Structure formats: structure tokens, C-alpha cells
Image (tube, rainbow, N blue to C red; front, side, top):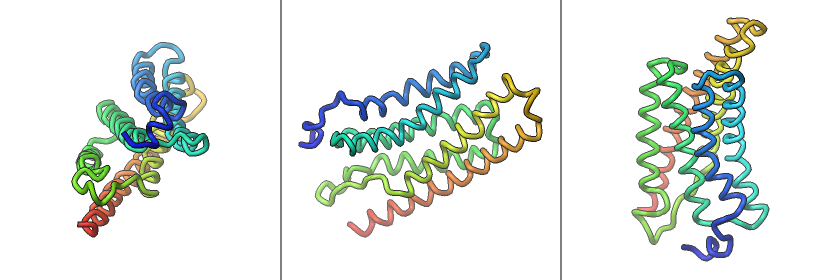
Length: 202
């Protein structure tokens, strides 16, 4: 464990927000799937909180002087779990069209490859790589696609289908799919940039 991790301690607010994304993901999906009155709204709200927590934990860690190696490693790792978990569910439910499976597999392979090498595991004397700005952009694009549009379709169809027309709902779905394609492209591109940087350090 690094000195900064020892100073910051494990049980603090930023790390708690990072860890909370996993139960928020599971509970959000369960509530949407459950079909009870208001379940989709509450589930979507929990997923939205999980999305916001990704931006809050890093900000609070820096603001409160609680940055740590644990947070630097686990924050992007849990982001990947959140994004891939939602993507898997959206594909299974058919909210993402079948052809998006190929994009999903490309994202999955990229994340497995980068996660396996991140932190300087292969180059311990060269230093590790943190998440760059493009990594944050692609995570944001996934959140916009999944929580901002595709999950919104479930909420609308549960209690607002009589108010919001089907054309609007379809527009939300298509926008979500488009954002997913952009996010997948950014994911593959950021992976290429990652391996290019790593190659220059060999």
C-alpha cells in the first residue's frame, strides 16, 4: 500500500461513493425489472445517482485530500463494471439492437486488455497509467446513452406513455443507441492511445 493510501485511509466518503456504485447498479436494474408501480422511476433514479457518484468521488477525494492508490485503481475498475453491467442488461432486454453486440464485445476486449496492464503491472519501474481525459469522455458517453436515454425509455413507458408520444420514445431510444456507438468508438480509440503510450515506454 502506498503512503498516500495509508494517510487517506480506506473508510472515507470518496471510497464509499466508489463502492456504492455496485449496489446502486444491481438495485436499480432489479427495481426496473420488478414491474412494481414506480419501480422504474426509482430504479432509474438509483442508476442516475450511481452515474453522478462517478464524478463526485474523484472531485471529493482531491478536494478533501483523500486521494489514494486504492481509489485510483478501483474507481475506473468499478466504472467498467457499471458500464458493462448496464450494457449487458440493455442487450439482453433488446433496448440495444443486436448488432450492438459486436461493439459490446470490442469494448469488453479493450477493457479486459487495459485493466490487465494498468498500474504498471508489466512495467513496474516505468510507472503506471491513470485514466486519461478520453477515458472519462467515453465513460460519460456511456452514461448519457444508458441512463440519460435508454433507461428513460423504461420510465416513460411505465407511467408516461399516454403523455409522451411513441415518436418521442423512439427518438430517445435512437439517441441512446447513437450515444452508445460514440462511446464504443471512444473506448476503442482510448485503448489504442493507451497501448501506443505503453509501447513508447518499452
